[in-house]
Length: 166
Image (tube, rainbow, N blue to C red; front, side, top):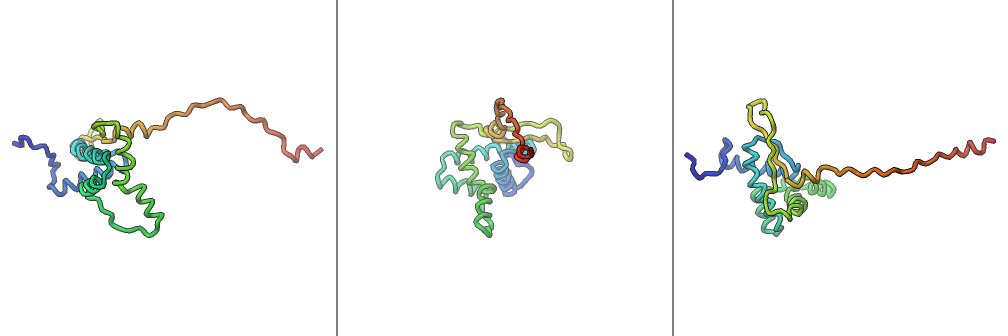
């Protein structure tokens, strides 16, 4: 019996499980939403929330802890400065976590993620599926409707050729 053992094994060895969870948290940080099995979503939630807690303090030591836990390494140098800037804006999960996600969660004391159960089951193995997403990203991603003010229509003036054609 597995009394007092909370680790979800997910049918993998420890190193494989840690790498998979780190990759899933990186994907969650990049894309703000992740569709996966319910068991994996429940396993990702504590890790993702710990990363946001580190991000809220924002010290150099916390950045290094997050990079170590997410097994983050920059594998290649980019050819141009523009490519480097593009990578930093879109792919650098440490920057996204510390500069975008953590500041938006400053007012919250926990509960940064939400798990939404999807109806039905996955076709191949009948696994229960779920969506895990950041709590504040759902409200921020929906654009607010703009109020439509009535504007007077402009009256078209005759062209210059029609005026001088007398």
